[in-house]
Image 1: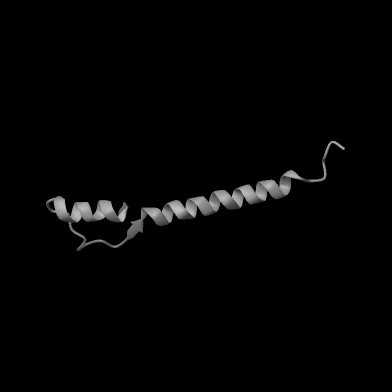
Image 2 (image 1 turned 90 degrees about the vertical axis):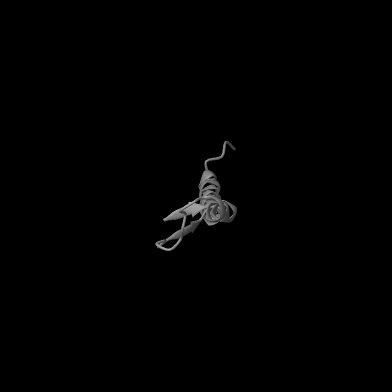
Length: 59
């Protein structure tokens, strides 16, 4: 499994002796992981904000 940004992966392919993708089974794009993390945080915030107003106001 290789996890990394596209630029870092290209750097390894060009500059790291013996680095190869011939036996690679999984490639995880780090920007996809970051995007999924942001979506998760946004969903959690949405749930929190929806539940923070439970009719328990001070008025």
